[in-house]
Image (cartoon, one colour):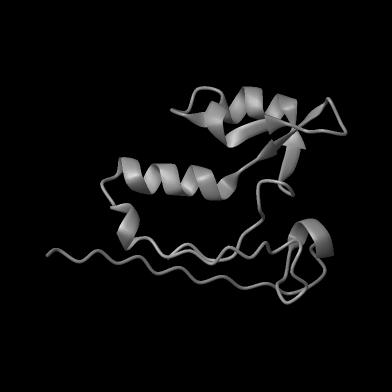
Length: 100
């Protein structure tokens, strides 16, 4: 299960961070696209990165369930990028693999 997260149209960061952190990761170029309004920034498709890494780890696509909502666009979710650090946020993650 891949839950709601900041989508690839909203997750932006500086080009320098891409050069430092992501450039050498396998397939990272497909996760990054130029920011349409700011040449100093890029957009990061976190969902695509997660799905790519799950598939590379052997998880079959039919076994991946996704919630496609963007936490920045959907006001029902907390987003540090939208709301700042002043609000309380909690996060829980559970990963399970079943052998058949």
